[in-house]
Length: 95
Image (tube, rainbow, N blue to C red; front, side, top):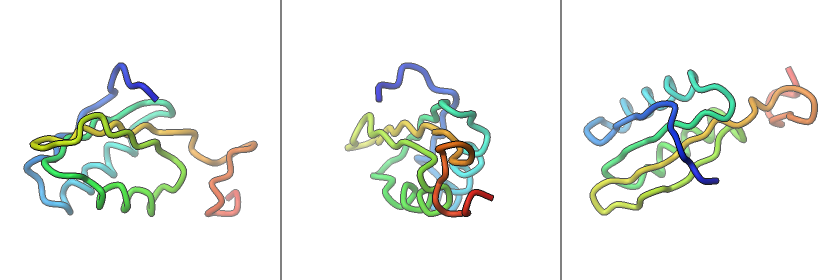
């Protein structure tokens, strides 16, 4: 995936992990299908990715655009919501 435009930017460089995730969760929830959030972090945001994957499995694409050393840039794109014809996420049983 190549990202040409972002729907929003979340600068988490000066936030705690908990605040970063809370804001990531909120921002991701506002994204429409196909929209992309630019995430900025001072370090590799692996913990944020792991938590998002646990909360919304198979609903996002995660692309590292810049790997530090001072700033990590990540494109988080909302995929189809996983509910509907041929789009089951496999978690809720189609509910």
